[in-house]
Image (cartoon, rainbow, N blue to C red; front, side, top):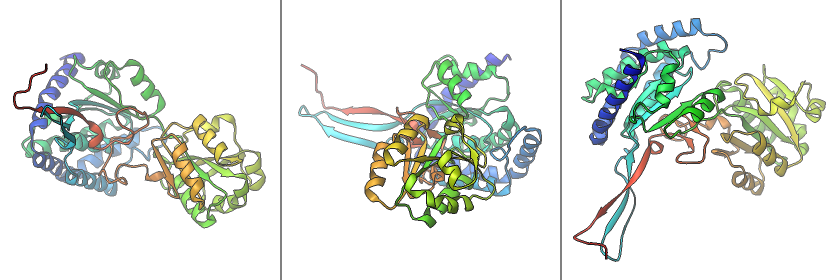
Length: 409
């Protein structure tokens, strides 16, 4: 069969499976996700062997790509957490009765068939599958070529779990090739069988999807995240938060890439620098005069390093910090560190990003940390969903109207 034929068949199978998953009970969906977690644990050796080949052939940084027993165990545990979440399908968002007696309810309903296009993050394979099932959807996964062996091995385990639970394995499918033409076919909607495309990756991927998709897109742009150190910050707390926000895992989208520091807080910069061992600092003239570091250039303010590199910019206060974020941020995650509650609340209100924190690390930008069990990604747009995309964010709603013979005059 040609690639086009294969992809169209996947779309048709997904549409059929979506109807089955929509009609399943909440407990059936829960059991399917638990079975996927069990199979993933049972097939751990095969998944890790496939991942080792991906890592060996990868070029550049491999932290996002690499799996070990602990990470794989964490992925399986995340599936169990998703299985335990309340099922959103059919839940009432609002209900009211009109003067004519019509009973109207707004209820959550699955979107249908999701197309998920992602780069070198094997965990997305499992996370996306579980969240799609929890929300009553079917999903077609398209992994980046760097992680394809890992994704295929994980998918084999997930499909076995679905079959074990009595649901169609075609509720979670994966494109079996790295052929880029498959992406174009998926973006075309597969003859109307795909309802939503979700890209998760770098700017080039998101831009291509946004440009070429013929179905709605739920975008996940890169994370140029900021931590703003207010003059009222506690020095010890500030050093701890900045160190975690930058270095806990430098390759995640919630890692802080730019530190904005009040001019009146520059005396804290040496302590913060000491808390960032092995991290390259690139600063403006005032930051350089306070702590020896490389000179920041214009491109640094918009850079997503995904590496132990931190840009440092001195600001005159809250207004300048908010303006910098508005100009250079990607709408992902920003934090303020400070003890001045009024300044913090102003920051939380004025910064227009998906996630805004006060006195906490930007690395809390994660569906698991929000109690979602896992996430498909962090949505940086403003329509339909924003922030961590969990089961509720993969539903839409419909109106159910109950009458007893009413007709409209």
